[in-house]
Image (tube, rainbow, N blue to C red):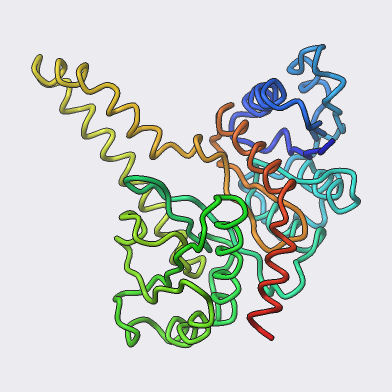
Length: 329
């Protein structure tokens, strides 16, 4: 039975939504156990007695806060993040989930669990909504400065994830740039372009709007651009939601229209709600690592756990290693 190690204290709202999400996941999937790392005094009351045979609590009270430096994570060996990562490193757990300090999780996973053979730098990936599905984008924050080789590796990892986890046959790959022409881009993307041409279904350069129109399955960029894109998209979605709410309150006709269109608004909310996707996988390390949003609610944590289970049950890492060896050989 799979075991998922969970940093139970790192989220913005403490252990309650993390535990609530875990309980729902345990109810829906009877084929995994969890090791939750944190303050036993706070955690034990959150786990119903009937689930205590599937939930082990590893007690520690040190928590790496959002204000701490990620470089301190390796020194804080009693922290919830460090001890949860060590469970995976030592083979006591199959995957790691955290809504805590993302930088600490990335550093610890990279240095303690280790990278897949052939991967220079792991990458954080996320799903961005389109009209009829999603676009998988990486990197969105792990690597501010990248070279062409890093972008090539991101593309290979994105291709493998799209095939193995998202069940997309022959996913289309695009390199994010400021124009579709091969001549467009900065020095790094121009150097990466011929490397990516080795990959099947590479469609060339794509622009920012292509992330959201569904024309490409996987979009490749460095973590600096990707993180700005991600935060900008979150801001736009939030602002649009507020504009709609403010305008709906202005007249009886608007309110009536909103009632009639409530199903449409519900579907729109699901499309842009990060809770529906759970978390962002850190691709390129030797075991599944899912980094959830700090503000994750119970539903987000449930879906983050399901992501970890799906990745742990797949052949994703073996496929990434094989593809890198074949394409670089």
